[in-house]
Length: 194
Image 1 (cartoon, one colour):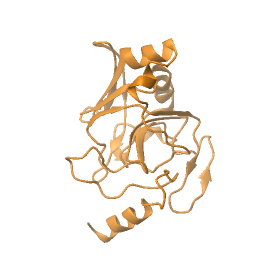
Image 2 (cartoon, rainbow, N blue to C red):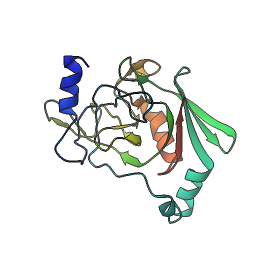
Image 3 (cartoon, helix red, strand yellow):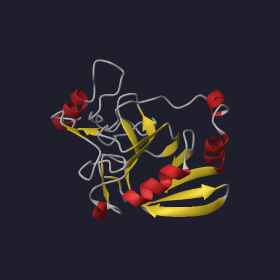
């Protein structure tokens, strides 16, 4: 671990288990764990993934989004593929984690969806409200968390970076694309990163 990584670890270790908006992840852990470096934690609240029995209590339309749709992120393609059952429904270009902040591979579940999220800068504490300058764009779809940091799909004010490896682990999308994706998924939707 370099001294820079140590600084990251200090910033990412709040005293409580509640996620700190704007916190950043420590250096990527061993690949045999689910965790990886995350994008700047931009979440005002972080809920744990729903228990399987809670999925039975979802409204019918939300249940169908969970049970019939799944997302496959192919890092090499820099695309997310939306499947309806076994059939490809649509795909979108994405930006992925840059070297040292790779997007974690594995199978995850959507656990949080926020329209027009605000963002807190991890070092200055400045809060950026929803709007055109917000680094998250117009939507947030969280699918990985270690309880402090989170990784998810989000928009971006700089759409020209979509297609590149530029994030801190998150999946950046064009704003119109993440808005469409947001409408297609619900809590519990499977996200496979390969």
